[in-house]
Length: 96
Image 1 (cartoon, helix red, strand yellow):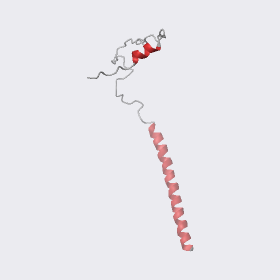
Image 2 (tube, helix red, strand yellow):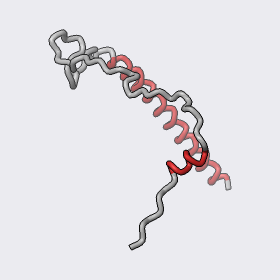
Image 3 (cartoon, rainbow, N blue to C red):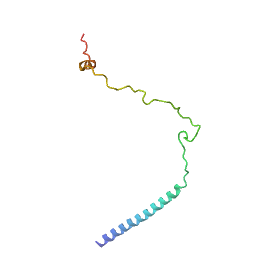
Image 4 (spheres, rainbow, N blue to C red):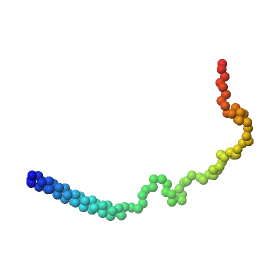
């Protein structure tokens, strides 16, 4: 039994030691990445036309009214309901 507990203790301490070793390397890598990110160029390639270029071609400006399809929706004068229903009722099909 004492041999088993010594082996377990040795394995646990080895894992703890590796964890500390790995965590130190992650911190070093994070600091290194942050330091090297300052060396990157600030500009990137633009896929389309540059918006700051005054000679860039743009679509022409056109006027389109926002209320052009407007039709008055004021209430109509009342009609007898039978006449209004008859105007919208489907007609029966003619038999041959």
